[in-house]
Image 1 (cartoon, helix red, strand yellow):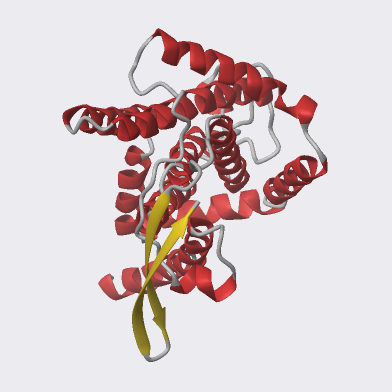
Image 2 (cartoon, rainbow, N blue to C red):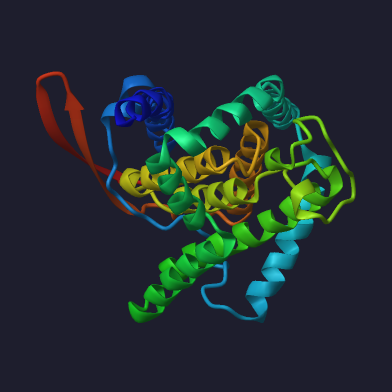
Length: 306
């Protein structure tokens, strides 16, 4: 009996872990958008410099909530100012998410098998799913903000306030789309193409995945306010694990998770871009780059005036 169970567990586990090299490569590439090809994989910048405008609030105040309101208006109105690249990004995102529709039911049946054959994987899925809860993410952000208070770091407080804003505005979009589409969840047993528009019923609020959107909004925000590749890669890896957990636990179809991830990522990027500033003139900056390659390990130190 135990041998039979082992044989059943192995395929499901192998299929899951086959995702890991893809996820790791994806995260390393996104962690260093200013590098190309092999440099993105081999260079891990360990610098950490604030990128937010000095005008961005560094404390919870009336100014901060006014900033959220202003950014929300800018976010809703941004399609009116989109250019060719913006519409191309939207088109590619829609294609990426929609391409999973034909496979949604098959992936759903696979995850049902995992419930019986891979209990360890299900436990891991529950752990990451809990980590992606918007309430827990707000708790993490609050802890980071408190750390900024203790260390008297305005930049740290700004970074976590920006993450909180990105998460909050993402949740507004998520609830809007969930209610508007009214897509049935996988466990409802209605199939991948069952929709009940303008529904508030939880079993009909599958599209997009709120956990995936929240995780990628925070990861995107964190990545925009630091140049630490270690921190950025960790944030993207965690967001990827949270996203996969929602599929493994059969809470969402794969397309729900893809759309949610893209939604959170782009909202985080947009909110960050609204509040970024260029480095001051003649600012001295040091960069430390560990470099890894076939047969060598090196450390380069770059000094620049921006």
